[in-house]
Length: 186
Image (tube, rainbow, N blue to C red; front, side, top):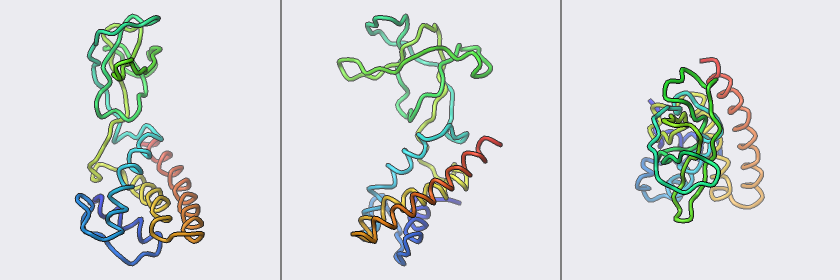
């Protein structure tokens, strides 16, 4: 079973760091745990945003909100755990072939809304998944390399850290391609 600590330890091992962390929430006290606690959520959410991962894609009915709009008939609240919108659909749509035009916009008061001309809309979106047990194995590998690229500078420092960060990012891109292909084939 996968865990955030396991992914962090895998990322550290990619860097050749022999230390292991036992907790990142809260960090157990080591510099490595503190760095992992800082960068892990950013790496995870960034990777989630890069693709329509099947384990993180969901569909919900949107809640209409009252906002002024120049060009759109309906405004909807953005789900709190949304990482990225994929499509806005009629409530009865079976698939994305009926996708409607929409925009996501921040209002003057800071509220983020989805604007569309579609009444009773549903949203397909990538949601924030924080339970690593739900990640696919290739997503875990990709995440560990992405996290390693972020940890390389703070852990290794200087030119060595920069070079290692670049190497880890290249590995991440290679694993990302494999993970996206596997996800599409499921």
